[in-house]
Length: 133
Image (cartoon, rainbow, N blue to C red; front, top):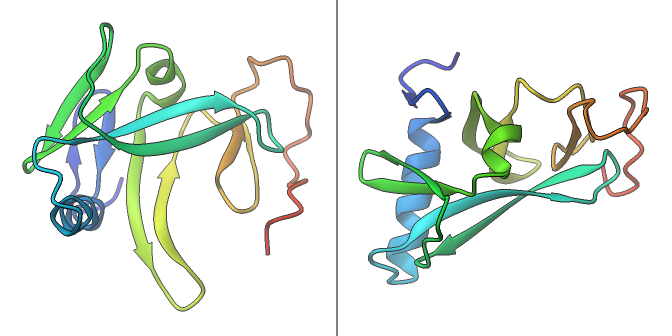
């Protein structure tokens, strides 16, 4: 577990993720918006993460708040995301959000696609993503 992160029983955000979300919301003047995290089919490992700034809450959404940042996950995606940590990394190669998901049994080398083993995908855990570097 990363030091100084805010955690709920469902998902965690690191302080750098909270700060990055706040900067995005402020730059775009999106008061009252939340970070929506979702899982959809696709990617080289079977499932992929998605994120959007959203102010349209839906029935069944799971919400959490981290130092004033609201996070929303739909009721299907939370089953794949439970226990995950969302971080924001900024280094020489790339910057962006990174998800550490304890439910993933295989993932793409770039970290945007994953498999939990329950999708019927028999991938061996190796990265088959042609966009990874």
